[in-house]
Image 1 (cartoon, one colour):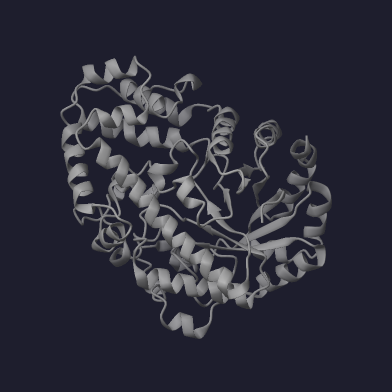
Image 2 (cartoon, rainbow, N blue to C red):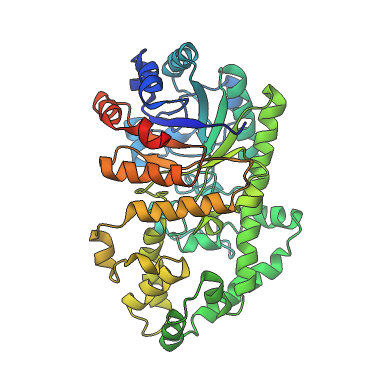
Length: 451
């Protein structure tokens, strides 16, 4: 199961399928071992689904929800859990045939819970008071409740259907998380009745945790600027900050409970696939170590239901490893300033950087500067990959994300971080257009990853 791999997260299945020689070229020139295709139209590997599954699918009315997701008017499926019907799987079948001929593994791909709640509010995550999430944080994800049995059972059956009908060598589930921690309100979700019951089933005193979270939010408002300034001077970590407020211990336990809920679902999905088709690699992308627990990933617990760990991207977007903390800082700092009297923007940003161990990166101390600055992306990425290697089980595969469409010097530095930390390979992200392929082939990628 754990082996050296160079995996292509191929966002453009139709283009890749149209070139029957493409996989052989990538195998020979960059050492490609595995492809994980995704269609930007349906957000899966391009699966069709059976009529029986479609009949009980909770999202089959998606075409009627263009008012909530305007891209539906373009024929783009909303990003929700599982496999929605109606997609033409011809390109996927061609790509599978090409992969088999060239000896390339092919992994299936679907999304899970961290998006879709804005399109399906009836299934959306709620906070501990039962309220919907604040739409000001929509760009970071308005997720689906991870404890809705009708969604999870249907998603599980869709996974089984896919691995039985397509010649897949493994599976990667995406969006297997809560909203990115930059979504401040999302840190208090999901607190619906379904998640309360699921948390209690894991042995948590959910009512006590909810009371603790309420106390934390109230206690946070009693902090003053002087306390924050004093804390900044003494190298605080996140636990130090949580301990300033009543309910901080319960908040930490809340994050562990949330992670436990997701890990349990992951284990159920993996077990179902293995029982149906035999053991295949099964895993997901995860948040980087600095923020993993805040987004629903306790690596120790997660590894009970995953054979490998990867990431969304090296940097950029919602799940970039090198931009996760700076994205978070851009939302947490103004939220702290709104909550703590007289706290200044520069003080709030300095605090956040220290809480996550980023104070030595000399990051901007204004929100405007944070938007405009050239961040030290390779250095931040290298730190997160190093932490991943240090805390992950040595028996699990580690394939950090490599955005190889960046400038060559940045790509080389990202590769060096993977090699220096003795990871098992990488998840390579690049487009399937002719120009993108040629750019990748011109890089010295094989040598950088073999060095």
